[in-house]
Length: 184
Image (tube, rainbow, N blue to C red; front, side, top):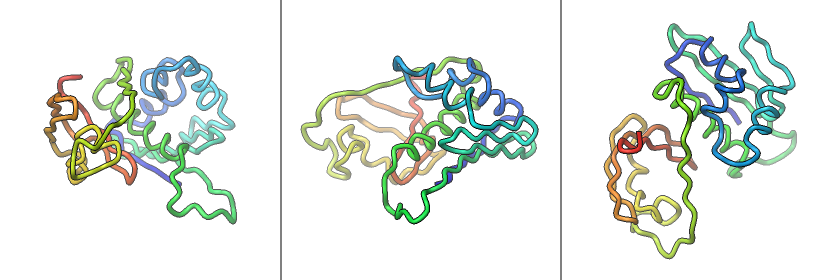
């Protein structure tokens, strides 16, 4: 598995966001009791960090930073066990890395120096709000956004009746990241 994003920030800023505990806390993960220990395990106590090459082997994935003018390509690679068939397998760790590099990008490009906020939804689905999509997006009333591309604006009415507008931040086979104007 490999995922990469280009962050419109210099490499030293991105590297600091991967190595400084307070900076990591601003973008990594979500609120839960074990977040500090998770940050230490992944980033601070990493297997290997090379400050000159800007590489970080966390044991669960390898970060490589590539400077490009005023931007940085952030690449996370995770090796698959030899002989294992992984085609079509939804892996939580891979999905986590996709989420985390997008959160890093959002934090550095749009919310530098600000603490992250977590929106968490819980409950049981009764039926899809949208005919276009069953799954979580349909349940939220956001099924029509799958055809909207990253960088494009969207407007949607959720299953709760809320009107949302913002930008499609990223999209993968299994994730859709949205900014919401009214939520900052």
